[in-house]
Image 1 (cartoon, rainbow, N blue to C red):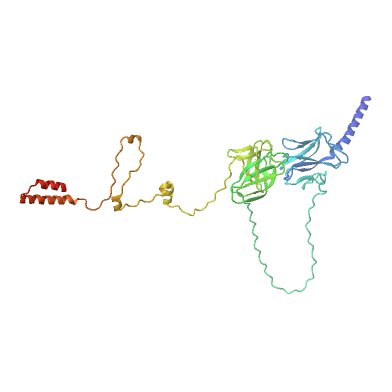
Image 2 (image 1 turned 90 degrees about the horizontal axis):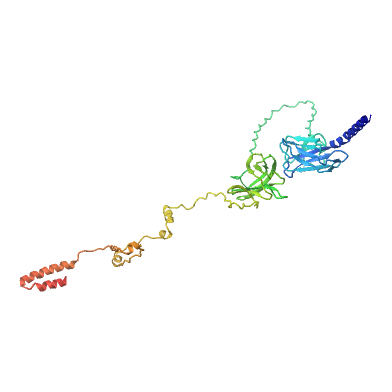
Length: 429
């Protein structure tokens, strides 16, 4: 009998617990989820739809990936007031393409859960109205009541039927020809101008506390570019919208407010507004306040970020040279003269020597540096050859011979002594 009484007592207490605790837990719901925001971190909103407070201490919020990760473990004695909201912010936890959220008690019981297969930038998945079973994409209402009703489609106006007038005899007129309308040409797609070469130069993946992540690019062209609503993406597919300017021969910076890159290693891709890929950079683990810079040996960590300026480990970037036509064409002589020493190129032609100058000039021997082998036996310098004009036969010896013969002949005729005559001729010759 005593055992039966105890069984009845414990059964009653259990039923009372189920009647009290279960409804209290059931009144807490996942009310709104914002997985794809470009202006802030992603977040989840809980809502207490009941009229009594609920202690959610030690409860657990978890995602629904193949390998689930814990999003939030609530501290002890965390109280969610009646009709109150509780916001849980996360960084790069929810997948934009498909994911879900599950709320568990400290004993592992599922309190509430939701899932989605897609998301839209800067919109949230919300129950409409609060705590309802209808999930719709809407403008985020973080910590505020969701819309009270689903959006109602605007009905198309029904055309009214005009009364039919009584027929009257109307003279027939010739029909007016209706001109055929020319077809409207299809709009030409607008091509956004881009640099001739995309050159990422620095990436901040591990900013200091309170600072944003950013991507720096260099523009090698002589014109500036402007980009609006482009995208950056990490290795998990999370996206952030960026808008930036690239000045001519300068650096531009694209930054985003909420965290995107994983500090233990990630990849960063730049996408056009249509999500076509521009480039991807793979990054290893980084340190707080250090940036990845592109130098001559590749990407490396730098303790001194150079936001919007030249990196410290690389030379100043050189703009692409523009082809400038040469206004003065070089002549073959110019090229030859430019290859000579200055003294050689300035030499002039020698002045021809005249006859009088050749006969009166006195040549000075040139100073030469002789080697020790030649110093002992100097070689005579060859005589200078001069141009000589006029007769080369001396007339005086010829006249002397004629005169001598005549004298000898006269001496024989007049019986004169020859010896004194020969001596006189020798002195004259």
